[in-house]
Length: 111
Length: 114
Image (tube, rainbow over all chains, first blue to last red; front, side):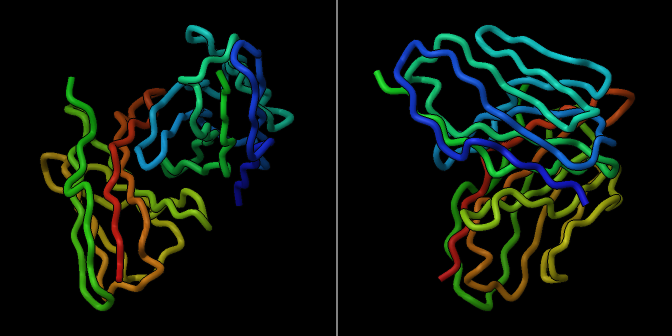
């Protein structure tokens, strides 16, 4: 059974800092890995998707890496802004088109 | 292109009642999945439909059921509601062909059971 863990559970940083969110998974037989952002009480916004054959993806200030063999992914956020405050969720897609989610990292960026 | 839509956005029901939630996927997407999000359990997979067939089901009791119509719209039904069913229910759609498995989520339906 796939298990996904995210560390840290919560993070508070001053504006402008670069930060790294971590995600680990137990079963490397994944189709892809997605990073999502969730604002309080809202749905999920897809930030980055990394196919199982890829090593990283970049979008603006965001960079996500994937090491399938070790079961790890990181989301790097450069020059953080208060608007980045949200919960970040990592999810892996296994057979059956089923996403398994981590518990999320709650990020607060202070002005 | 319109995103995934879910209706209603908010619902308040009483224990023992039943509820139906609706999800319209992105145009052209044939796969629709449902997830339950609670503070205690996080996001959990309920089931997935593709071309009107349920292909996969999570570990939820039979009170949770769903269906998909020929236009790919999906409904989820919960019967005999319990307090623990209070949650944000999220629907996701994807193309689900070749490598196009990216999941797109709707805004969710917030269900409160009293």
